[in-house]
Image 1: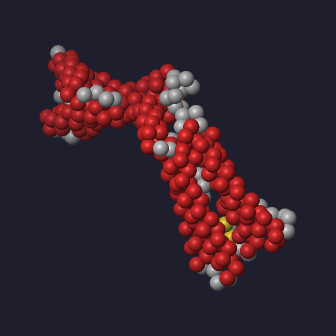
Image 2 (image 1 turned 30 degrees about the vertical axis):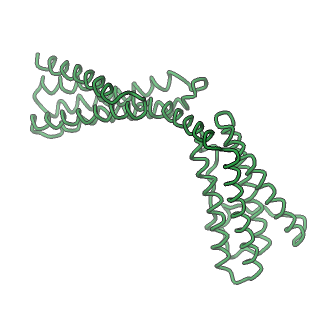
Image 3 (image 1 turned 60 degrees about the vertical axis):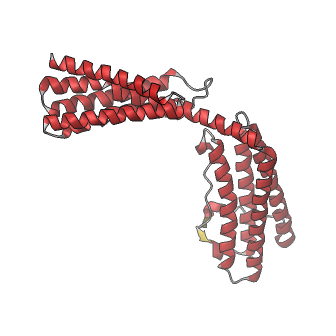
Length: 318
């Protein structure tokens, strides 16, 4: 890699052309990835891609005028300190807010980079060129703001934000909540049954650890194999399965860890307190994301947890 301040005017201009081309393709990818779910936002990025293409055309005209027809391939990753762009395929599935923020950062960072680079050079022509590029990015940022205002009135943006929230609930909250509920509730019976049956904290810990990890693996595979997401829009099955399996394990581990305390009754009291906290978190998530009334959510989760808890105590004490 070379330092930016080692580049000639010719190389800087070639680098700017390549950067504008890359940004234009990123915006076009954003538009294509968002079109089915967020058509208004897709229109914004289509027009921004056209703006980048126009910047690239002007830069090419200037390059040809000064240096001739051949433009060397100089990429951002070839220059030390240049701004890296995360590939769009790594952002799948595209979230509307994440894409908007990345687009804003692309324009702001590029403009700032050009200005900082201009301040570090003593060559007047390079300084002017970098300053012109910075101004072009600032103008594009203003254009982007106007495009957002034109294509995304308040009601459309609210609609797209609500759609993004629904997708987040489908792809993250639902599998995570299912796993957390299963891990927190279903492992209560074996953990407390083992505790009361043996009277030893370590035995209860081993049973809880095995139950938590086993339930996490089972729930993860069950969630991943239940739906490939192609019709329901619930996202990649491996991602949902991973979320569900991890939350299942965490739900069981929470009230298992207190049994590392050697004093049996101290461990029991701490574990019961953790169970109350876990059920409270589940109730809050149901109220926050699943539109369940808070009292109803607390009663449903608490009643189910109490039944399983009592079952474990009765079996363990028998």
